[in-house]
Image: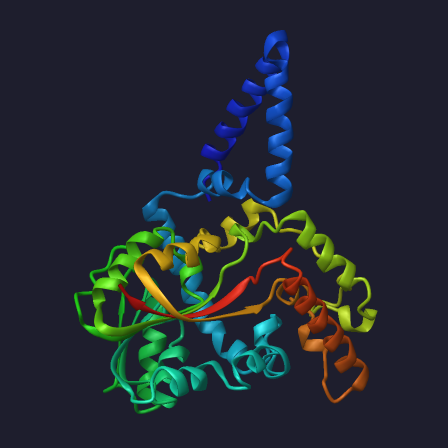
Length: 358
C-alpha cells in the first residue's frame, strides 16, 4: 500500500484548517467545514476521497489484487462447503433467511427457473475465482458452456484443474486478464455473470459498457453483489444498530474462531481494508445506479445483510439450528434486520439483479 499520497493529503488539509482558524474573517468558514467533515465521517462519505488517496498505482494494484485473489481462490473450497465464518457461508442462514426471498430456491435454481428455462449457449463469468460459479452454471442447466476471466493466473490454473477433474474441460475455458482492460468482444455471449465480483471493480462504467457490448441483444446480465458502504465504512447509525443487537447475543455464540469473545462490531480502518485487498468494495454503492444506466433491470431482489453480514461475521459457525435456543436467537436477528429494512432508514447491503442490455 502506498501511504505517501494519503499522508500528503492529510498534511495539506491540516495546514488549510490551521490557516482558516487563524484568519478572523474566515473562522465561520472553518466551523462550517469542520461540521460538514464530521457529518461526512459519521455517514461514511469520507471513504470516497480517502479510498482514492491510499490506492496504489495501477500496476501495483493489479499485482497486489492478483496475489490476493490467487490466495483466496485456494481457500474458497472451504467456504463453499459451508464451513466458513461469514454470513453467506452458513447453509442455515441461506436456507432460513436468504433463499426464502427467492421462493425457497437456491440462487442458481431461481435463475434456471425464471431466466434460463432453456440453457444459454455461452456464458461469461467475471472474476471467476476458483470456478465454482461456472461449474454451477452448467450443473443447473443455465449455460451449455462457459468462459471465465480472472486477474489471477493462480486462480485460472485452479479453475482449469477443477474443470478437468470434473470432466468439464470441453465446456469450461478460462483466461487470466484484468476485466477493466480486457477485450470481451461484441455480441458474443448469451449471459454474463458477476458473482460477488463488481464490488472489486474500480472502473465500473467501463466494465458495464464492455459487458453491454459483449452480450447478444437477447442476452442477460446476472449480478449477485455486495452493494453496501464503500470500503465497509458503515454510517454510525448502522454500527449502533449492529452493536445493540450483538449485545443481546449469548456469550457462547459470540466466540470467534481464535477463542476471543466478539464484544462489539468496529468499523474497519480504511488503511487496513486497502492493505488487505486494494480492490475491496472500492465503489460498491455505485454498482446498481451505474448498472441502470446501461441496462434495463428486469429482476431485483434486495436480500439484506445490512445487519447480519457484520454481526454474524466470524461467529456464524457457532449457531446450530438443532438447538432451539440458537434458532431463537437467529430468528430474532432475522426479524430485526427485516424491520430495519422495512423502516426505510436502512438499505440492503446485498442485491441480486438480472438485467438486459439497452
